[in-house]
Length: 277
Image 1 (cartoon, one colour):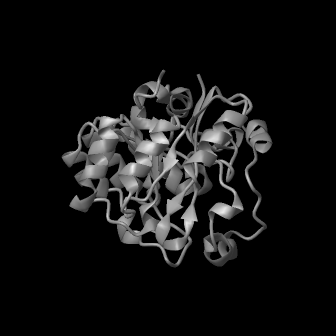
Image 2 (tube, rainbow, N blue to C red):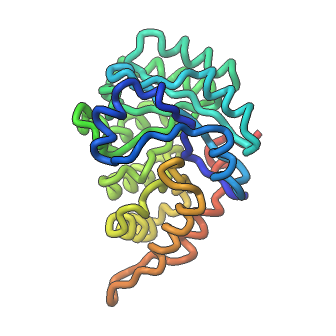
Image 3 (cartoon, rainbow, N blue to C red):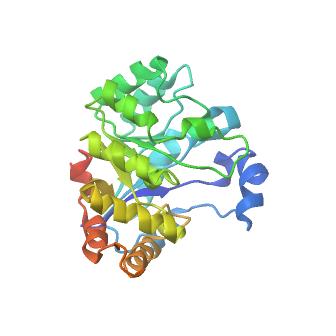
């Protein structure tokens, strides 16, 4: 069973002006919408994929729930749709319940762009309802190229407080919280219902190498889930990138073991996240 827990179905109209103003100057190139056809082509060999958009109301980023549900219905790839929510929105719980009624089974959160503090007690009703509905949270954790982003709200240690107050809430910290991978691993070690995906860690090999070696040393490899971050990378590119990290050697220093990478690739994330039907 090969599962990709981090894929996007974004199109340009969901971004408002955020992409062209703040991201395109950093990444360059022209925007290309993700279509069902391009998605299926990239996901060949994937047995199950989690797919979602983005929501950050303050900067005009919004992927409609109906769009994600319809996208899942159109692709051939077996998918689980996640809703994109912003807890800053006054109607966020109603939005959650509506998206859940469409069959979306998890929540993508983007505090660095949405500008909300994950630890604020005002969000506790949101976390409680997500727990009741058995909706895992997938947090974008880590940096952003956008100058309007709030880096203080994207630190993995913030999720320690969320998990202490809501221990039954299943949570995923994306990208091993880059560049705060060490802190992410400490949160994983402490909380049984907190996991992390490895999407993009291969793109900065020094940090990725250190993160996976630390995961070995702290015995949290079983909390790491494969994610490609498509369309930034395909699943095939993600697998190749992880295996490349396992090929690196530096004298007598510890290294990423090949069995670590294969364990991540082969993890049954749907079981770990409570999403197996």
